[in-house]
Amino acid sequence: MPRAGLSPDAIVDLTLQLIDEGGPAAVTLLAVACRAGVAPPSLYKHVRNLAELNTLVSVRVMDELADRSREAVLGRSGAQALRAFMNAWRHYVVMHPGRYAAMIQTSRPELVEAGGRLVDIVLAVLRSYGLEGVDAIHATRCLRSAVHGFAVLETTGGFGLPVDLDDSYELLTQMIISGLPKSAQDHADV
Figure 1 (spheres, rainbow, N blue to C red):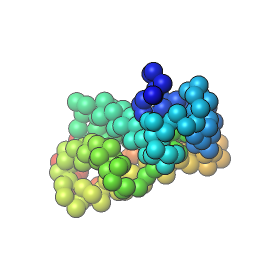
Figure 2 (cartoon, rainbow, N blue to C red):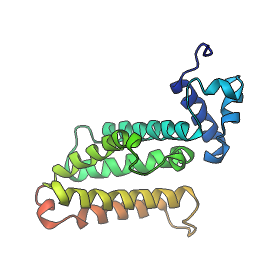
Figure 3 (tube, one colour):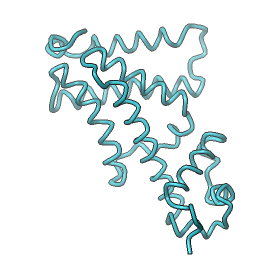
């Protein structure tokens, strides 16, 4: 019989605590079971294995990132929305570097829905630029690459020169905004 209060969501909560404290490498079924106060076999009543737990953690992280991004862009459009989206993403990574590093970033079927929520937010922002279809997908990939790369380099100590990171990120944001196709810029409040 499952322990009262233990569920897949509760196990993900405990796993995120471990990640926040020790990074993704701290996550083992034994460590999660100890945190839950149960024997490791008790976890199998709620999650099949470590791979499934990692998938559940990834879905949660994507959901958190999508929620924060959606809140940031709400009521904004064009350059304001794009800037808010980029800042929300970076802020999440900086505040939760372990969670972000633990996120599986592939198109595995279990992750498509959660990842789709985040992509839908980006696509909505890009629609205010008049970008749709293939053009919006290309812009989304560029945007994701830029924000992901900067934030990961920032959280892993990849920027060693004594120059303000916020200034660098603002330049990156402006480069992304001004790098959109001219026809897209005509639709937005750049």
